[in-house]
Image 1 (cartoon, helix red, strand yellow):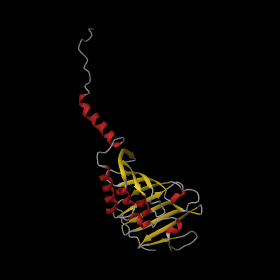
Image 2 (cartoon, one colour):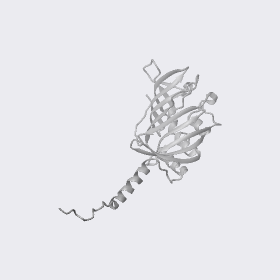
Image 3 (cartoon, helix red, strand yellow):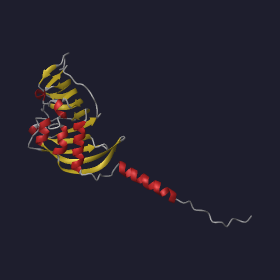
Image 4 (tube, helix red, strand yellow):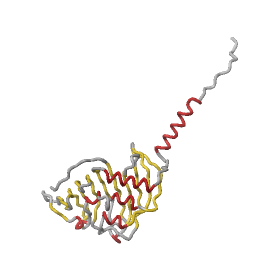
Length: 236
């Protein structure tokens, strides 16, 4: 039998080229890329989104405080623009960690102290903690950190689960920090990294500095979720 002398057809990859290019672009956009939006405009938009939402779940926490410092280890709960807060605070008092349910509304803070069954009116300053309702104050709360930040530069886009976040690095003046946490050194500068999601909302932030005067640097992580939460928070 005579072998065929026909040329073997070489597979053509050209029809696949656009699909491959699209896949590469998608992968780049989902991680390791950067944004072309002006960083200050992006943070101003994130402030507006936080100021406009009916409510949000807030988490503010640090792994540790300097020795001998009474302060907030963790705050978790729902904040609204009443302003109000309903959640739990974990504070360090005399080197002991105490976790208490807290409701803040109408300028008062109520806490259910350890070994008690009822909420009582407390001064959060006695525990080195701020009024948690102030976290949502558009003029002096956490959203104000976004527009107070200086030297803001956009970083890479990162993927966290199903979210794509754009990072922004800057420095927040101590006066803005002290509006939220009064014990902070108002003369200091606080390096911060903000992460903004594809909807232009603040997702999380890392902020470091002398939150408790000259007692040393503390690293806080702020996380926000549940934008649009609606909750009627009343005094207990």
